View 1 (cartoon, one colour):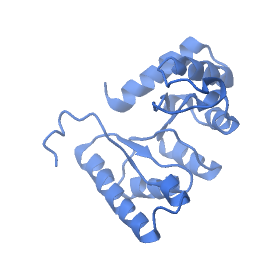
View 2 (cartoon, rainbow, N blue to C red; view 1 turned 90 degrees about the vertical axis):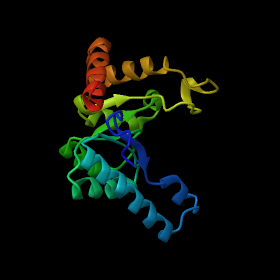
View 3 (spheres, rainbow, N blue to C red; view 1 turned 90 degrees about the horizontal axis):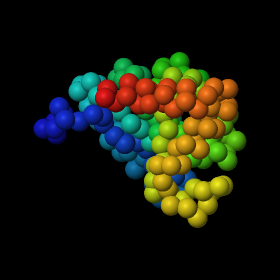
View 4 (cartoon, helix red, strand yellow; view 1 turned 120 degrees about the vertical axis):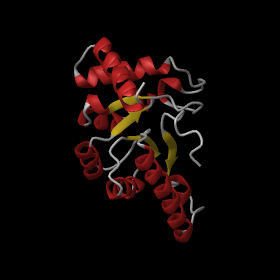
Length: 178
């Protein structure tokens, strides 16, 4: 490992198998191994001074926050984040980034997350291909969907779409160092 670390922009996407655990396809002992593997990636992010992109939702997010804190990793991006208010507050305090998908257009819990989370620590994504619902039902994931996300974030934050779009782009460049 490490032969391409100079070319790497980030570590990730890495994380924990929340949905597999929910479907009882991962045992407790297997889950411990996933945590161990993830810790290796967190250590690499720290050692190589690279941002880390994480899949850690709901009950997995506090576990990942513990790992990030243990290794003093602050440049973390929780992609397509979903979680409770306590974890959200913890992540805001730590300065972690989140990203939201086109779900923001039709899911109230994502709209509430965006209302709470600072725009300066937010990005957007499509995570395609993914079969979204709402106005995107039956449509192939497309980058054009991000316009809808920008519109909804602007509406929630009471800002112009241009301001939101520019800020999200700045955030993405800042996080990835590009």
